[in-house]
Image (cartoon, rainbow, N blue to C red; front, side, top):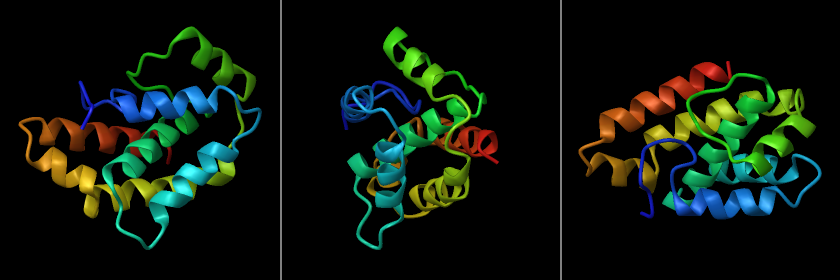
Length: 130
């Protein structure tokens, strides 16, 4: 797991995904990423990490910022799309629930000393999208 912290954007997989997002002009990549976390298949760590990053950005679009630090490019992208994505909030909640219940990412965090911090970060993110 190429993570250096338990924050939503603190891993290599999500930052690679953000680079793709910056090239888009709509929320389709966010929507797809959340949908993939709701798929019936096994929820691998990369898919879960990307879904969490998607939900983090979705929360920012609703002006419900957390402690994440955004670089200038991502902040500009968020500002251009402010207020969009309300229709994705319920699916985002369900995706976060699934990630915390049954995902490879959860299993990896359970093996670390920061599991409780990760769960706390997930709960905080859930609160911001309700």
